Amino acid sequence: MLAATTSVLFAGAQIEPIVDYEKQDVQKAVETVKKVKPAPVPVPVVCPAPVPVVPKAKKWYVGLDGMGAQFETDSGKCNELAVIVAKLGYDFNKYFGIEGRVGYGVNEADHDAGGTTKVKENYGLYLKPMLPMGEKFHLFGLLGYAKAKVKSSWDASSSAGALAGMVDESSPSFGLGLNYAINDRWSLVGEGVRLLHKVDGTFDVKGGGRRSEDSINLDTYGLGVNYKF
Image (cartoon, rainbow, N blue to C red; front, side):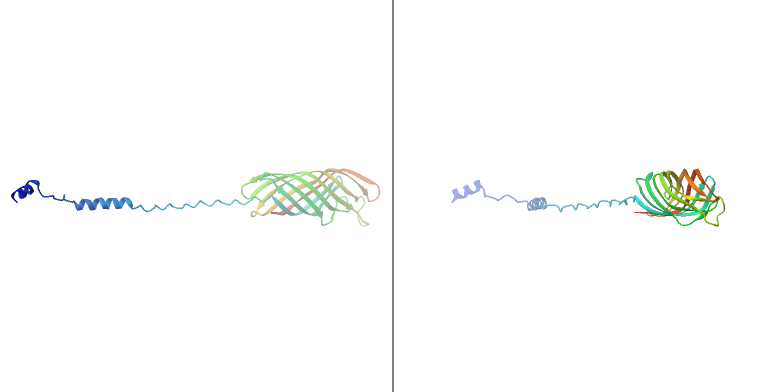
């Protein structure tokens, strides 16, 4: 027994190492945090700015003019004539277009030489240069070719020297006007156009004989409306 006791004393007892539980808990907490995935950060949704819609420019238009007219011959003038003119045009851009016209006379008027005169019909095709003057106004010119029929006549009550005959001629035609845009479709137009320029005509003269005149002009002037589509 003495020997056994001495052996135990010299060998010592087997003692378990001291465990630091507080440190162990911290390590476990750190490992747990590492295993937890962070919540995804929401990505903001950015809506693109709306693209402004630019309305398509309207290029075609129709129009109607109420025009006064003057028929001038070597022997005098005939004023107070009236003509209705229908138009169809196309604007390539704000500086240039093309336009066609058809007109019909609506009345007769006295000629200085005697008798009466009436514009029967007229046609024209024009190039149309334009000059913008702000947002509402633009000047325009008309350069083209026109054809017109003008009838002169006399009756028993007409004075001697009255003319009778038909001028059915074509010539270069030109004009100038001003357009005022009410909105993107409707506009008001004021203009003056020379339909016939220095053409020839031959007339029967009351009292006998025939007369040739070689400086005949037909001018129109007035107001109208245009509609774009």
